[in-house]
Amino acid sequence: MNTQAYLPVQPGVGMEENFFSLDDILLSQERLPVRTECAFPRLGFLEKSSDSQDIAEGTKMELPLWLSKGLYERKRRILSVELPKVYREGWRTVFNADPRVVDLHKMGPYYYGLGSQMLHFDSPENPDIAQTLLQTFIGRFRRTMDSSQNAYNEDTSAVVERLDCLEKVLFRSGQTGLHGFQSWEKGQASQLTASSLVLNYRKRKITDVQP
Amino acid sequence: MFCEKAVELIRELHRISDGQLPAFNEDGLRQVLQEMEALYDQNQADVNEAKSEGRAELIPSIKVRHCCLLRDQRCVTAYLYDRLLRIRALRWEYGSVLPANVRFHMCAEENFRMTIVVLSQLQWFSQYKKSLASFMRSLGGGEGLDITQDMKPPKSLYIEVRCLKDHGEFEIDDGTVILLKKNSQVVLGVAWDILSCVCVMSVSLCPQHFLPRWKCEQLIRQGVLEHVVS
Image (cartoon, rainbow over all chains, first blue to last red; front, side, top):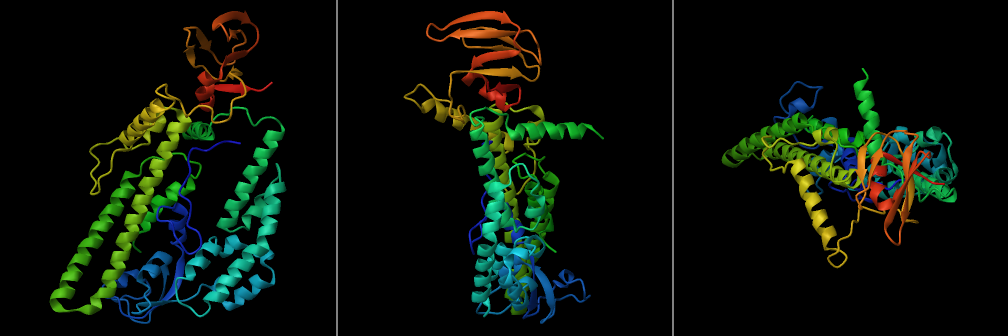
């Protein structure tokens, strides 16, 4: 096992976002369907479907999460945010029926992250969404943990492929633990190894030279 | 859409998640700053108009641009901060002297024109080095302690190592010079009398060195030597 000196900023937990976290910045780039509740003068170029100078009231468009979150206010309605398909009633039934068969990478890949962020927008369905997120996670967690702690030197890509970003991180840390334990059992834990950072730099240098 | 360039900077770092330092994207950063300037100017103009002519319907648009400004700011600061974390990691992985190709990826240009003050990254690295060194000197009752050593608990004072590439001459504390040569079959096997600190040297046919652990930990991390566990 290699100790890593580079520790990136961790993403926020639950409804919180971490300002410096790269993951959270990419998560807040996910697009949400919104409906404008007032006109936005001189910003017509943001909406490609019409040629007018302004964005008219009642336009349906997709805005990234960070912008919707910044514009959303409870008192003065500038826009209303609609739920993305995967969090709506229909999909929630699917998730409740059997969370293990769903390909969360395709649905997300930030299924849990985006779902928790959706709770910022007042919606009567919020408690149901939160409940579904939790149940989905619980339902899938056992299998994720089991495979990450027992698949040693096996091709795990088929399993990892269908995981959400959050689950992927958990899977990886389980694998690190497994590999660390195995190398301890073989008596290799005390062996000094070259830094993976250094090795990767060298790899890249070679590929840079080749055309 | 606004802020696409800024997110591109973040994606660039996110793609390389193992901590390598990609080249400083000066061009991308400049484009983001230009976008921010344009957004600010437009907002300023609209704010003045809204104030003087009482056009309250402009406010939502002002808010959109303001959100974009904040977003750009977040992306740029996160970009720079993550780079600092990576540069800090380099100090621990490579030691205090960086290879030229790594140093190249830091932003060394002092004349880089930016509206926000960015301490040149090389300068930051050398200052981090200095603070770390003065901290390590202050440890152990003035004796000093190298905390970048012994990342894994040591089991013996001496370890067996194999040389993986030509490194040239290597001097141990007592002045003995060993030639580290790639895959050489006739190498010096150095046996140490620890108690009297007398070094007994003998030429042997084993392709391995027997060296004090703390001397070669850095070289192992850099991939010059390989630790042989027998």
